[in-house]
Length: 539
Image 1: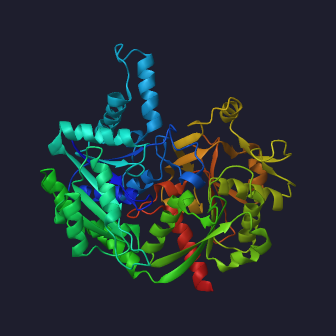
Image 2 (image 1 turned 30 degrees about the horizontal axis):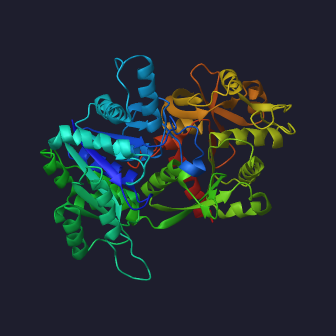
Image 3 (image 1 turned 30 degrees about the vertical axis):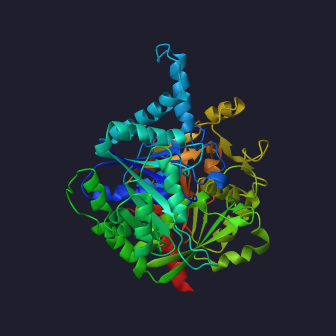
């Protein structure tokens, strides 16, 4: 196998995950089997216990792994399902080393941070490649060069480069700012970033130069001189309209050829046509469609973040672009919506995404009541389905104060309740990786909208939750017009609900957004956007 390590410098958030995804796509399009790997430096064993406002979306894989949101980018760009070996954390690494030491697997050696931690990291790099039968492993190093947290990951990079110099590349993504008061692109931050990399025994083979605009020749020559790289190995990476343009920019800059040349590989094929066609649709789309997302994981201080729902956003984009629509997404804080509920009539469609806890749920329930009564297309994801069941129970069945036991354990009408095995885990404070996670089979009911959208009877979708539809209220709810359009194969758990007397009203216990891809949009999002587009045309 060949290995490519991708690091970032100067500031965080400049697109290291997108760069890694793009590199993986380019290599796949050149005919190679690629295994991406994200190594996060934090001590959490996985991303599942972290606050989404602080860390971003938890992306769940088919095997139930709760991972960093960059795994979502990898899957979307590669159009492939990944597994637990494509993601690791320092917490996993340290835990593994300590467990092995306790089991005397080091034969009585003194276990040291170096070399044992980097060696464990490299085992995981190898396993990521083997798990996918890969020719090339592309490793994204979490964090930024110069941080203490990720030094052992860089040390692992140094060690494998030392052993296999012809098989290992290091690509460094760094940022060239243009201070408004100066008006000139400055290369010094990148130089200092590379200097920090050099201090760890690593010299970058390729520089990806991020900036607001394309790199000029003067800056390229300067970086080549002070960072000890060839000018051809400096790839300009300017801001683009869409993240999906990044691979094309890299391809046009010659990145694929530079990587393959340095790894002594020959391109087996050239196939970016489908991707280029998708990007062309992004540029051609003109008509605006207005989608509102009503949630609570948006705000951090004075800023609004979208990372908590990145897969929802991308799923909306995939389906909108394929229908020549430009999505205009508005974040609506569920804690502030009730006084201005009539504002929802401005939107062509509304989504209530996943979430946990009691904060601001009444705003979500009021939102669902409004869109149900006013026939605005609605898609409820996980918590959004549960809130839809509660709203229907309260306002159609007149079950006063119906609720989920997550919010009100003593509610008289627990239309959503905790799964028995989950209740035991909660009492034992066993929170990590213990929810209903990963891909579960679902059987769809004939003559339902969901069955029509999927075009098949059996599906598999990804879950992440502890609470479920309470089957004891099944007859009451279906007797008053709610359709149960999807269940587990044994019929014991409700997976999808819908309303027939509505342009589009579907709630799913699973997260369909996790399986939507640019080249393969999810059928439920496709149906939602089509319905919203029809409402758009009526106005």
